[in-house]
Image: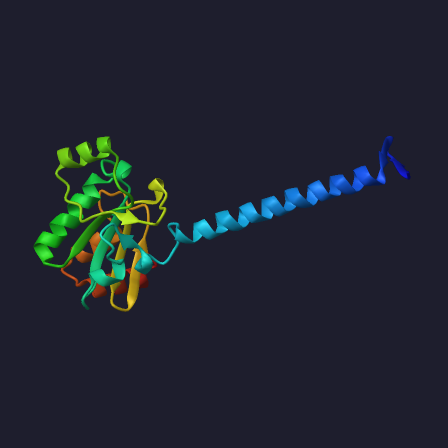
Length: 184
């Protein structure tokens, strides 16, 4: 039986081949794990929001019938932190008559449901099949049938640049255009 003596290790060729076979298996397992993790990551916060789905099966793309709408996605754990901006959006909806959809990024836990009820914040459903990091919310989206016109993350308030642009009586399209000219 032939042996290999390298760096003070004495091994048979059979032992050496077995080790490299194990190493190949370990590398293959790591690559497979990376593939699985990578496949799951295509539904994170950076995924195309037009493909996000509500718990009732409605896709976000189906929420608009032509005119732009605002969609606010917020993690239930962040609702108190961003209460002021959510309240501002609901007030703007009431004053403007433009549709605002306030969506939770996931189904709330029981304690979060109690907090949401206590605050009186209306929600229009929750997303499924998407992972959005809590600290990235709230996410403001302006969308129409053509897709997403504007996307802003981590909008904590007391207001947001988009809300500020809308306060001058601009339409959603005018406000988005104004923001694009200021670089916001």
